[in-house]
Each structure stands twice: as structure tokens, then as C-alpha cells.
Length: 287
Ligand SMILES: NC(=O)c1ccc[n+]([C@@H]2O[C@H](COP(=O)([O-])OP(=O)(O)OC[C@H]3O[C@@H](n4cnc5c(N)ncnc54)[C@H](OP(=O)(O)O)[C@@H]3O)[C@@H](O)[C@H]2O)c1
Image (cartoon, rainbow, N blue to C red; front, side, top):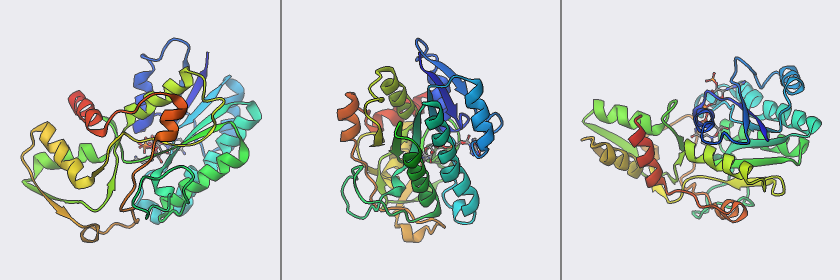
């Protein structure tokens, strides 16, 4: 029976693990921690936690995710996204545990206008992306027993995200201007958490370590994503498509950031829901 440690469990993905723990009950036991219970930047605290609990798999959902703020807080972002991932990997290596580390599509050198595969070159263009890639490299350097999942555009009924922001703004305002020249695929955090629990349940993650892309299927822009949210929620708001250059942000974001998921689906043998179906499921639950 795998004994799981889920760090950062009050975040979007972490909370989906909590929710799914009743569905994935048989054969699993869970330890949910967030900063209060286990600060992952505290190496000794990680060592102590591992010594006290016989953990089999660590799923690291803890991260510094404020992409624009990271431009000013590089030291803190590096500590959480890079160094702490290394602490977890080192502890996993010493205790013969498996580590599942979450990463981002932003690590890629995405300028090819085609779906990125895991072997594509990386060229992070923001502090956040740089720290996430450094985290991946530290994980790889400390333990072979890892899976790194690069995901994109994560949303959920929990936390702050594009879907919740659009539902709120769409109800408050008559019109919005949304970027149309950034194309990618949203990821419903529940699908990601479920996919991870499914691969753990079928056990073949042990013989298939490495990097995997995971987002929902399909392709969209932020503009089309907003339109889909408003259509499903019956929100009457005029949406004007704008260029990224009309909405400057501190951190640069890729214009084309679609992930090729064939390695994931081929290795683990199950399909991934389309982003529209998952969006409907999330909105039906209420955001
Ligand atoms: N959100 C996205 O669009 C997106 C896209 C691609 C990849 N990802 C990756 O997916 C993963 C999960 O993202 P998410 O959206 O679930 O993030 P999130 O909602 O921001 O959750 C991150 C959690 O980590 C906690 N945390 C931060 N520092 C910590 C520390 N030192 N020790 C313990 N916990 C700490 C946070 O607590 P506080 O709230 O107290 O800081 C928060 O609960 C991350 O690795 C992220 O980089 C996310």
C-alpha cells in the first residue's frame, strides 16, 4: 500500500489530491502537508518528517507560482522551486522513496509553433521558469526514482486562477480585453491529480521514470478560453481580442505553448480529457 506525502496540499493541485483521496482510498494512505506542517525549504524538517513516517512516494505540489512577482523575488522563488525540490529529491534518494515533481511548460524554448515533446530544448525566459527548470535538474541529479510532470495553464475550483477570475470579472464588467496571441492548453487540476493517482495505482511508474508532459487535450488561446467560460456560465460580457503587447507583464510568456502528451498516454495507457469537457466539469461544480 503506497504511503503518499503530498506537499503544498493547500494549493490548487494539492487540494484536488485531498478531494480525490476518498475516491482513491483502497490501497493508499496519505499525508497532506503545506507550509505550516512541512516547509519544504527546511531540509532538516524534511529529513525529520521522512524519518517519522514511512513514506513511499512524495508528490511535490509546493511551489512559488507568482510568475510576475518572481521577477522581483528571485531568491525566494529559487529557494522554493529549485533548492527545496533538491532537498526532497535528496531525502527520497536516501530513503528509497519515489518523487513526483510538478513543473511547467514555460521551461521549453517554445518558439517552434508546434507541440513540445519532452526531449525538446529548454530555454526558460522568466525567473519563475528558470527556477522550475533548476528544480527539475536538481531532482534529476539526486535521484533516478522520479517523475517530472510539465503542465500548463492550471485551474481548479480552488485558489486563484484564470477561470475564477473570468467568472468574477465577467459578472462585474460589461466588457473585457483578453490576449489572443498566446496559445496553449488549460489543465484542470483534478485531471492532473487523478492521472497521477491512476499511474501510481497501476504501479508502472516505477519502471518508467523521467519527464512527462501533461495538460488537457486540445488547443486554445486565452481569448477563446474566456469565451468558453462565459458561454458555459451564460455570462453576458463583450470580449475583445488583444495582443500580448497591449497587456505587458513583468514576466515574459510563450506565444505557443502546446504540450505533446503522447509519451504520457502511450506509457501509462489511458486517455486525457479534452479541455472543454474538463472546463464544463469544473464550472458545473461551481467556482
Ligand atoms: N498554476 C499554474 O498555472 C501552473 C502551470 C504550470 C505548472 N504549474 C506547477 O504545478 C504545481 C502546482 O501548482 P498550483 O497551481 O497547485 O500552485 P499553488 O496553487 O500556488 O499551490 C502551491 C502551494 O505550495 C505552497 N508552498 C509555497 N511555498 C511552500 C513551502 N516553502 N513549503 C511548503 N509549501 C509551500 C503554497 O502555500 P502558500 O499559499 O502559503 O504560499 C501553496 O499552497 C507547481 O509546481 C507549479 O509550478 C502550475
